[in-house]
Length: 550
Image 1 (cartoon, rainbow, N blue to C red):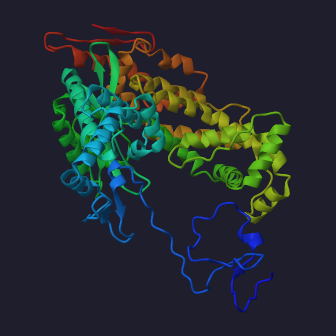
Image 2 (cartoon, helix red, strand yellow):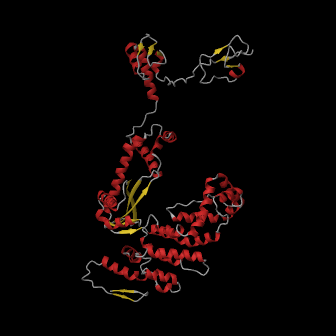
Image 3 (cartoon, rainbow, N blue to C red):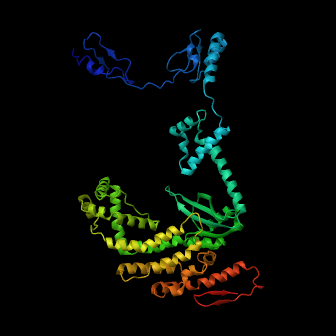
């Protein structure tokens, strides 16, 4: 029977109201059911306000078999045995258990026996102070530290489930426990171990850098390097990474370095400080008065930037490459188009690389990947989406692939030199002179070079001459080179080897490179002969053939 809309507003017919076998959790209790109608319907008054029911915790305590709630707005309960009202201020069952214990002794014995039996059957929890718990907690801490994960990981249900499966009686503690107990203890243990190794070190070298986080906060990191005399291996430890707010003046940086050295008891062991080569850090090296050496990779970065950041012809080529790479990375349609042509050409589907302004070699890798995907990118440039994007940006579709490939050839030795000098687990200062000499040699002009490539090589050569002007006179570099069995004869600096390479010979002559061998032997004598007065010295220098040391 149809429902009268005037007497039953907002009515639902039975065909809709009873289509599901179970009622929804939000159904309202006072819905009326018209039992006189053959087509029964439920009506909902228009003025009703639907409020969700509060979540009720499950009554797991055995004492609840003797009590019932009075109303939903109060925690108070009523005893079923004696009808006594038992007040409560929370969901705790302590007052209820106390009432049964004092008023109903037999029932209390039943409840108490059941609770004891349940507790006995439950698995015993390992105390956090136990050896097994300490081992598992340390494993979780090592996982977070070694993978640089956030500490909140310990509260992740999936990680907790893994530990529970491995050891059911162990409960992974919260992050506050890790901060207050585990990490502090691990830091103290690590610091003591590092301190003991530093106490055994004869001399140490420091490297430092000031960097800015993504939240625009400045930090200063200081790392110590030394040779472990027990196994003759290089060891490195980060002594401190702390916030460094305020002006980054040379005086403040020197004070921070001295305080760190005093704190670790190594001030009298420092023989050299390595940093970047900005004016502030040069002054820091001078004021710190422990010996200073500018990072060679940083200088190479500046040399290459003189080309890729300042020459208009190179900047235009790189600007076009960056625009296409950015378009492919930011547009899923462009990326799918690139993948389509990569598949059709039978090559791997690879992302294009976008460079980072602070690392020149990222520009090299960007060009390398761009050239590797030349056929796929050329096909993409015939698509309307690419043409429209380039047209809007006023960029020509004609890419100078030849210039890119020639530029790659010129920069390839610089990329290899950057990797060679940035090794982490062995000293590299003895490689500086051979590497720089090789770079200068690679810039020798060839008849096949275009005019632009000759200009680029000349720019790089002049930049090396300017930035490494005193390199072949540096005492630390010369001593490290002459003490390295691979280079002690300076075979890479034989003047006769460069007679046919005019540009290279001229550059090395300007930098006094061919005098480096004699100067290194002088430094070697002055550094390691204890009594100079009782050891008169003379040097017989006969060009490139040999140095007679008397």
